[in-house]
Length: 132
Image (cartoon, rainbow, N blue to C red; front, side):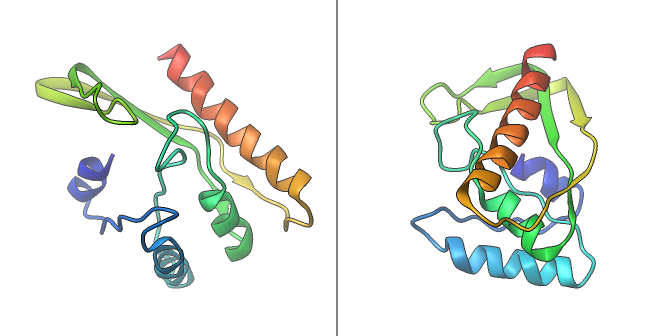
């Protein structure tokens, strides 16, 4: 995903909960304030296919719509030794990109509203992965 974003001219910010997470969210929030798009890996840091709350919290706090995006390629080399089993396209592979419907998130008032949004994102992305 980072390679695709770079190819589209986007700046990639790498972070995790344990390494520069808050600084990265702050940088992304600044990009949003300037009207620039941002992309966040929903399951960043693992486990794979389990959405984290970073993208949801950022979209909610910034008052912007969240646009689910899934990508896959075929044929590809799977890196099964990585936490996310990343797939890297081989030359002349086909890249499939899916965009879901944008969704504006309510201001989170409690952990239940955060969990409902997290489950929506996780189910939306995982259903697309199954139907690819």
